[in-house]
Image (cartoon, rainbow, N blue to C red; front, side, top):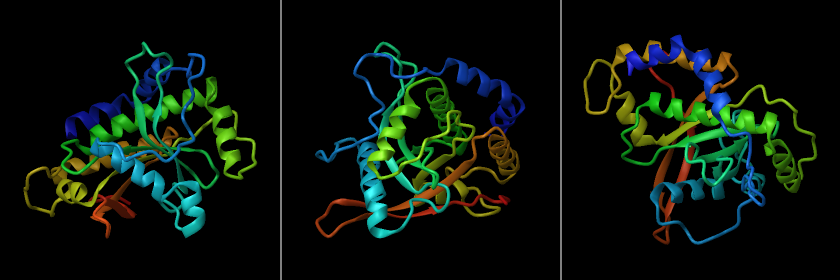
Length: 247
């Protein structure tokens, strides 16, 4: 992870330009949308899809308006949608769907990359995936239909403001259960399965800082998974994650 973090750090500007250039401009096929509005449907059978839906239900615009607790402080106020499609045409297999898309206090998009319990991904892998999606969101906003669809969707939430024509900043939240981060960070000076080595963090944290300089501020967050009284899965206690040596 240290070697790959340094390699990405050294070529970050070029990699971001290439990713932006290769990202789809928008949903090109007639009738396709970014699915910014969601309705209640039966819980999905795929675990990660279930977690995405639970997070959307718990921190949708209306849910936050009712209980008054934003999703993640000043970074993300509410969740607009989950599984937001990116590919421009049905034949385009290079781009999938963003796990969750939230909204800043200014009602602009936030990309959220979610990992479930037991995921083996490193923080670097999560960052790379979230960063690619953020580039795609920026391009779809600046050159495609996303800005118009976003304005229409937020207007239904009672937000009447003309969004910026150019999206200079796209925050990225890398989200996983508490146990995932506990295993990844581990204890100082001890080697445990899945822990990122202590000497990796300075390089990785500098990479995170440089992403922010390029307009992609990176945030790390965790949540608790529990069981409701009726036996259903529930998600709670969203909070920020701090790495060793992070400011």
